[in-house]
Image (cartoon, rainbow, N blue to C red):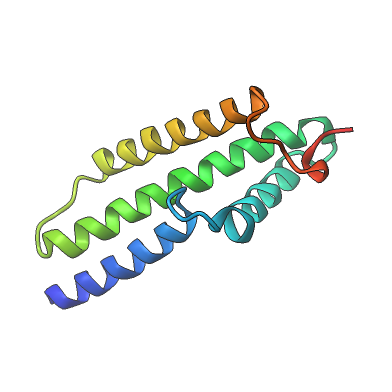
Length: 121
């Protein structure tokens, strides 16, 4: 049943790539709609928190994507051996946090600008 685990790993890897910060086009298609939907749901009645909640949702979608890629790659490469999901989750958490911090810094120092529709007010 190794082929079954490798196929599952390929699916996890592909879905994780779509959510991860590694593909340049994924933010507009996947991550920002997911982040905005997350923010909309958690800020019902408190719209002043929409932008911070969107940033948190964006970060969470990146963490999930990186972790899914790690799980998929582990399934594909290791085959019949067990993976260490805690280590994989920490790797996804740290790499996505670093990516999000860099992106936030680029926006904060006006190197990148947010679209007018995402700005509060």
